[in-house]
Length: 213
Image 1 (cartoon, rainbow, N blue to C red):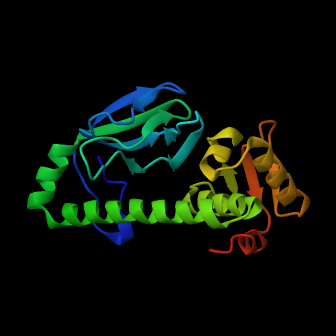
Image 2 (tube, rainbow, N blue to C red; image 1 turned 90 degrees about the horizontal axis):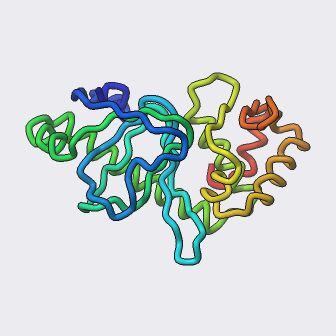
């Protein structure tokens, strides 16, 4: 059910969905494939990306539990979607959702909210890639993940540093240096060997590095 998605206090979309599971690294849908379904993350995490002409990968978004993705304005997917970890997603035929929206004003409102939210994220991402230094980009990313996190006090990042680098338009080494710098400044601490669990010790100081926050 889409009941977990409740934009700005609006009524949740409540429609029965089919669930499918994907192993880590498995493709959920490919770029330019027909956008016949809308997806919601039930467990795990998903990355949406494009492969550029020079072979580089540009990640456009990370989709976490409860997030809806794959809703396109056109008839084809603009990105490839891939499971970051073992992931379960709920699928709904796009046409079924559109039919419900035609007769239910609340569903139509939620669809508009989703589309607006996606456009806002795309604009914010373009701003992040075009105007911010590497440290500002990493700070903005951590603030975004903290805002979306469901675990109080700890950021449990499903994505690796390569994913973060491809999302921020940076090299792996630059991301690692920025995280180390934030650690040295006392802004964050790492938990565990893979350093994907992060404790933010000083959110105000972290926000000072994000000029658009």
